[in-house]
Image (cartoon, rainbow, N blue to C red):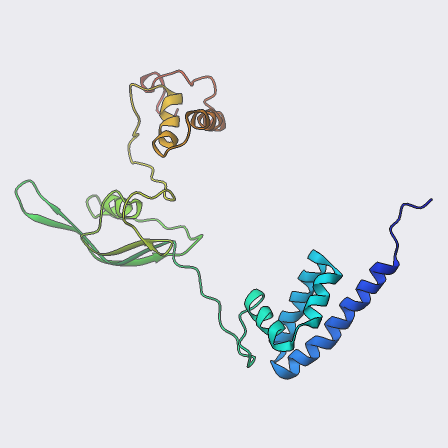
Length: 230
């Protein structure tokens, strides 16, 4: 006895699918333009592969304007007259808008480290800030990380103003910023613990990262017992 499923329902659904793809796009092309026709093709294809014939029948029984609205919202943002609404571009990963940073010197004078800083770093872009000592490189990074607020202007990360230390920004200090009284394992687990991660999960992740960087076996060592590279 064959274990293959009946082929007739599949052929019927295929015929219905082809009928929809042939009939409705022609109406869409006449009524709303070629982009809406393609939008409806995509809508049918998704409905057929996700839910089969019942979902296709729902599309078929709905009025053309209703389906057009669904196609416009779910597939491509196309207006009913056939024109295209361009999708909005993702915001810059980092953006400075007229940012200033001023510090008060020990003698009471005000020093401006950053003046009217404007630049963007797009998502996926690699950016290096290069300059002589004291030009504001570390200050720029501190503003991005939320370690320092801007004195004037705006600093945004992923389109949102920086208002404090965020959870989506990593900051590697110029010198090692570790607790000399804590072991390697405790130092690595400290960050997740400060962010509210459970102790079990924090130490599990710490063990994993120590292994990844080749320091497995040194979990109980203290910073003064490690080499500079370690």
